[in-house]
Each structure stands twice: as C-alpha cells, then as structure tokens.
Length: 183
Image (cartoon, rainbow, N blue to C red; front, side):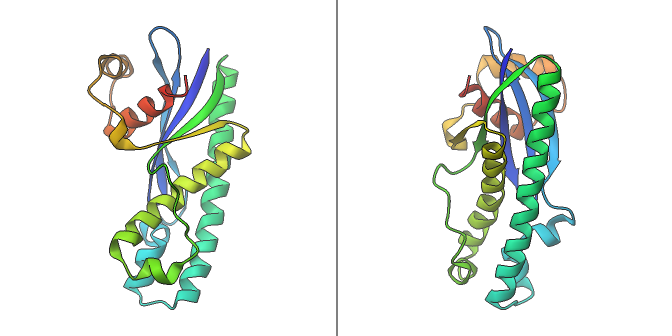
C-alpha cells in the first residue's frame, strides 16, 4: 500500500504519522521523535541566546551544532520509519511537513535575536528544515503544508482517529491530513 509520512515539528521534537492510501485511508504509525537530546534548554537556540545574553557568534555556534544534530536525528528517524513501513509491505512515497510553505533564512542571527516573533518563527523553521533535509536524504517527495490549510473536522480524519484510538492529538491529525495530500 502506498503511504506518506506527516510531520508536525516543535522545538527539539516532532510528531510523526504514516498514513496509508486507498479508498479509506488509515493510520499506519504514529510516534514522537526527539530531534535534539537535552530538552528545550538546548533545543531553543535563539531563546537561550536571549535568556543568557549570549553574543551573536555564540548563538551561531549553538545554532550550527543543534541544526547538525537535528538533521542527523531527522535522517535517522525517517530512515527507521520508512524501513518499518517497507517491512510491513508499504511503499512510502513522501513526507509532508506542517508549517510555513516559505522557509526562513536562519543565517541572520543578529536580526532574528532582535524580534521575539522572529525567534519563535526561526526555532520552528529550524526543525522543519531538519525534517525536510531528512526527507531529501531518504529520496522522498517533500510537501510543505500550512496548518491553516488543513481542516481537522473532516469525516475521514474522525474515522481514522476512531480506528487508531488514543492518543489522537491535534499534531497527529494535522500530520495525517498533510500526508494525505501526498496520496
């Protein structure tokens, strides 16, 4: 069965689902994936820079280290999840990531640190970009989907949630809807 992965990134972690296609789509897998070890204190690179009044160069070093770790984790998680799906006879065709459809440039750290709104946007985008790099490394089609373009009140999603059982959080719903767009 063709299937797709759906991801909702958070600071340092992501919710992941795999959805199988067909006349009545179904949830094949769901999990929480840690993208950075060490919790929010390490993962919130830009917030940490402001909180500890770090120089821009130190924030840039932290950003580069955290970005590299998040990309390694994303590649490994996507590779492991697709292997599980293939072993079960499924054919993963792509990854859909919920978030902005226009990635930020994370290189201007000084500008990001001047705006709390940009800090939040940059931290979210950091982890979405890591997942995108993981999808690319796995040779999967990539789709970025804005959360506001997904309707979590649809009947197919409700049936999928009933069949899957708890937990059926908003993250899993959004990931499933995004993945369905690839099918």
